[in-house]
Image 1 (tube, rainbow, N blue to C red):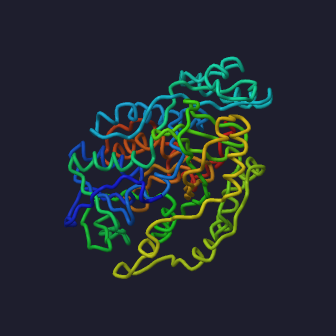
Image 2: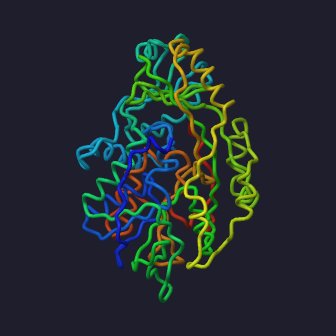
Image 3: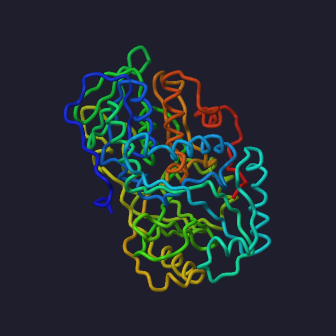
Length: 441
């Protein structure tokens, strides 16, 4: 799969100094680099592997407002506005198109669950709507299933994960950002308690601000600094099919989810299975995640794999002149779960017989960086002045990525935030706030 990711050329000479260093080259880091560079901020992005090598290229490609936690809705509204003009902004193709998304319902009970979320849509004047079975049939006439109805948002869209973050990163380079791949940041340096620089495997960069946008690796980095970030990994398995003339709006339904791809095939995943990796942090953060476990227990399929011992043996800290954990494993590349994908295709083919003739062209998996309330951290870290964290997007990061990058650029530069950053503050895990996911869909 990595061979399919659009390349981003690495800059060659590490600068001695920058205003901001970004750790991580996914959709968040790339977007942040773009918005900082547009403001003429001297910015360096360091990625230990390749740009978008992990979940930013392995996700479904959805860009949705629908079903969001209400704390995320203002940010996803802004993010979709950025997506719609991104191709023109960077002079590159991200694959973004407005196609609409459906949450399909077979029963009245399914529809009632979707209806409960509509109060949030109305509060923000979204175009989300509950539609009946007749309207569903008009939107996806290829379906052989008689759907009771759906939650439908016409203004939602999709992008192409293999090309989007790399395109944004190249756009940032055009604006003056420096991007270095295969360049792990081993740690930070401080003077008087404040950020004074970073140490990479290729040398030191003096800077006054550092943003950690490391996805599923962020917890390891934070722990090395003495910060408690209650982050876990969720394994997501995805496949793509050969081309077929099928439905245009993306859809989720019990047992499957799909998105039509630019190459004519479909990205397909399971709609009802969540596979958390059992690792030492699963026990360390058990009580943080207990509310989510109670809410989602029917869909959970915990998995014990080699990751348990790998993380058990990962050091909590390391000397900055020695190899770091980020160099030992450049890219998380877990294997997809065939039984999960087989079940997804079975449900998809039952609902859409046209998929009977298509073949599975490829499959892959990635690690979603999850938080106990399924809401990201986009925040300065008070304990370390000059240090910021943007992580824990809980499977929502691709669509919200440009908005998150813009919000973090505002925080780093002291500008008026594009949205209120309070819901995303790091201190919510220590200030007595009740940590729980939304009851939305």
